[in-house]
Amino acid sequence: MIRIISICLWLCWTNVINAQLVTFSKVFSNFPLNPENGIIIKETNDGYLLLSFSACLDNGSAECCALAKLDNYGNVAWFKQYPFHQGSNTLIVHNDLIYVAGHTNEPNSQYTLYCIDSIGEVVWNKTYGDPSKNSEFPRLALWGNKFVLCGVQDRNINNRPAPLLYFVITDLSGSQLNEFYYGDENESTLSRKIFIDTEGNFLVSFVYCPTSCFLDLKAGVAAFNIAGNFIWELDLPFSYFTAGCYHAQTDSNTIAVKWYVDNTNMPNYDLTPPAIYFSDLYGNVSDTVIFKNQTLKDINDIEPVWKHGLIGCGGEYPDYLNQPSQQLFGWLFRMNENLEVLWERSYIDSSYQGRTTFGLFNIIPTSDGGYMATGTIRNLMTGVLESHNWLLKLDSLGCLKPGCGNINYITDTEDVVFLKGIDLKIFPNPASNYIQVEFPNDFSINDVTMHLISNEGKTIRQFNVYSNQQSLSLSGISYGTYYILISRRNEIIGSKQVIILNKQ
Image (cartoon, rainbow, N blue to C red; front, side, top):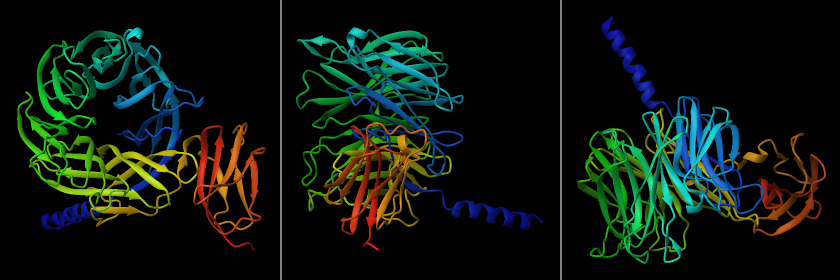
């Protein structure tokens, strides 16, 4: 009997290990005129939260935070937008509530913190900081029964802004408890990421210019206790690059910090390749892993795989030395607790001509043992800069399909899901004599225009939409690949690649 039970358990375990995780590559869009999309992904008990920021509907200088809730298969449950400018490392899900930090729009920016319920409705929002000093880009951390916001507040030095770190502590209702500053001795200091370590201190990574911001950018990590008192700082070397410094705690005694190293003594490599510094919880560096990036890799985010190392993502030009004009790929890597790189994967969407990527900006391990990464894909073929959220759900080896290699071309990504026109229908496809566009009955067609665009980006036909069911005649249009683009002024409502066949 014991043997039979053991065999059954072994078979069940084997089936679980060999089960194929849900994987997909999907592209979403909210306001495609701003390329800074797809920057935060979080997992909840019933799905995922994809957070991005982009231009508001008025097409002015204001910024909006956009939040889409997706199920485990990447299907959209709901989409909302909120009137503030959101950045990275600003989303927390706690007790079935969503907390998002950002800043109000200029002039006179202030920190803002929104509490949002599970269906996207605002429960409350608060603002912090002197509006005359422009407080911007706060990062957010949950600290027991408190929130910590850390961004920057402007000073005026020699008649120009010179930001320093500005901290605000609140309770869970958003009421301010404390505020303080750090980095006053530097010319400029900018926050990058914040989290609470296992000692109960909060750690902030930042970049700064000690005296001027001309080729002397540095980075560091600073630790503070619950009273806001400074504890220690890890100072990192000079760099020519202005990209971010990000950190993560990978086990009870290890902090991993992404920055750059001076690599001038190694020929055939960049002067400052990306590296990960490993320190204890007191800022003492014990080891460094350097990504010798003759292929021009850069890291945009690292996240812990607790007690088992870390996962990271960014961008890569796979063969830059031989093909300097080639496209940037989304790049991710997995490192174990022994600081060994287990695998690297690079992805690019080659489904349609003219698609390119800005790389991957955020990655998390998921509860099913896989990974979720998000970044940006652009479509350059429709005559407008379409910039879309790119979501990759991968298995435990970073693969979209089992047995993938280091370089992966995605050829079957679905059409972009336009969140503001999610029920818009464009059919038939392929088409011969006409293309039908159907809008939802409650959709306002005021100022809506339909465009037929060639595969070379040239507008072939364009006309205003007057009905929720509109047909486009293909008379005189030769066969080939085209795009149907639906727009309202500068906002893209929908875009779809269509195949036009010989006339019947």
